[in-house]
Length: 384
Image 1 (cartoon, rainbow, N blue to C red):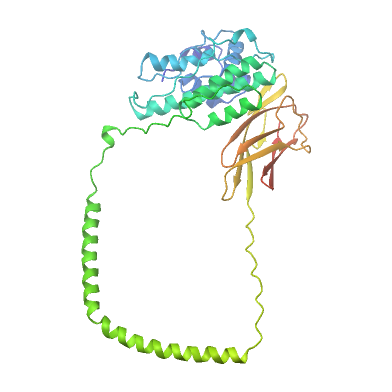
Image 2 (cartoon, helix red, strand yellow):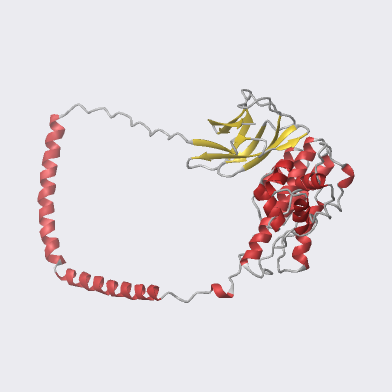
């Protein structure tokens, strides 16, 4: 990892703490510390806030350099620097259309398991790849809200391509999002290609377990003992069979006599009541929204109010399938350019972005989830 010394120096020259910088741009001190240590790179939104705070451009603050230093050489460094090609949303609430064209949108390079140097570098490369793909879709979502369909389609297709290259489940969700907004592109053959199994590292080969061999030997001995017992029991089987046959004949004759007596004494048949079919067990629905409490710290100030990212989750007992959600009319929290309904799959997270205009603390967003004929509700509270 390569620490961002320029960002740290700009902060220390002003005598500010990491908490002070975090408070000025609307984040937390832990995130600022990760930026300075090179663990993560700021998103386009926070890059703009940092440049405005320190009065410098992104290059002077070291924000255009790679946040990681993987040993894969120039290929990894070029991949992590490709995040700067994603267009940013300006503080004024307007998207500069001239920034978006086919050459500016860079599809993140997927991690290569075969070319990895170690497992750690592969996992870090994979996490960064997914983050870049999410950022592309986030920009496409806001572009679509502002009516910039061409830009939203290019950004959405770039995010879709990135997820399809690694077989990510989000590829199906983004394709559905594109279809719902008539931003459809022909399906990629990459999504249908089977994922190759991960090869085993040389140090992952294991020797045969001696306990398994020992268990096989014990099983053979038990089989031989069982065969011997069956052979020994065969000699006395004939005598036992004769005795059992005689006893069975006597029991059968007595049973026939009893049945004839019962038939003669009971001439009126007893009506047979139809058996009631077992009732179908009711499904259990449990809805969850993360975060369920919104503040000015976990939402970003915007010209439309506050931009908040929410993750919706629906658990259905014993079932997994599509569900729909909608924001109830009983919600007290005002929205602007936000989706009021959508779809999801039970057992998987569904991410949405809402723009709220709070007036006071305690206001709520009420979500209603529909699965077949069952419903469940969950609420999000604005705490200021």
